[in-house]
Length: 467
Image (cartoon, rainbow, N blue to C red; front, side, top):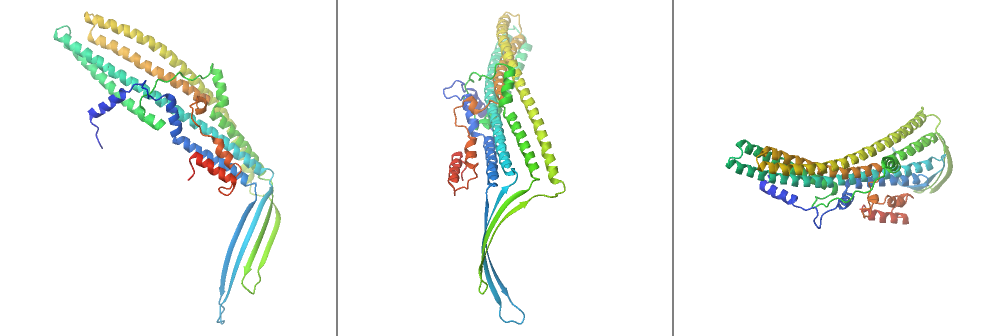
């Protein structure tokens, strides 16, 4: 394993800390969200799974159409009888074309199409939920990098201040104003400050790695986040939006519909099916057997008589699954409302924390200024001055965390309401259109052969998935 020299690591980290958040080419929060949206492998995976569901509609539609099959065969046979010197051989060939079509099955085919469509809509809501998670992770990564950067700079500044205090303490010790104990205490404080600075730098490196995982690249300079987007005027209004917009609730509603359709299908599975079939076969034989053609057309009525109670069990099972889906919908609404309330509370706490820490910072600065003046007159010890500096440092660090918490609480609230999407945030990018592929395949086109199949090729090419 290659070992990085301490001096090189320090220079690299110093370059990171020196990046100004207000630089001309600084990355904004919107830029980070766009990068996360475009580079997310999780979104690509979910989009592919959605296209799998789209094809289920095509499969269900295909089941309502005639089925055509062909068969070609050839056979050569040789017979050698005992006592007969010559072999008897024959060659036969046949070609057959068959067709079958379901005429009536009490609506099971139509229900299967409806079931496939509901599964598509449920998969779309799942895709929106994944999109929210991807964007929320990018927001948190952006805020963590900024907070870690500011904390690291704050700790570095604290080390400089304590170094100056230590230098002043040594000078005062040389002239006999203070004792060696005061100098040692200042040295201990400096060592602790350097340890905190190293920890802050480590947190910055960790935050940068998480940023790369969330957005696909390392951060350079990051801009100050813009004003948080508007969420809702009241907690009740936020909950109302969440009940109507959150993808988990909408997906649970689709799941109830899917379960109800599945129950109806299992009930109609006990009904008979009327189907038609036709076939034509041409047999070509070796002389002297003449060739022949066989044609048949028929209608079949088929259905279950007794299957040991299996169909009834399936029906009862589907009814129980429908009840479970309705209960899951209730739980989903409860969970979403709780998430909204929690995010609302965190937002209020963060706002109060910012106000309190601002007051604490102002008071700590006044106290530190007075302590330094008193120390020059011998009324304060070096340790007391350092303690006042630590109080100010703690207040400033708390202010950084509170500001980050406030931004994160806003976006958590948006996610809880179901509004943390590229479309709602108006990121200005071409978002994925789930309708495009669905519209291309819902009619079950034959790819390459039909005009619909050619349009499907264009959709696949636009999605970047055509091989």
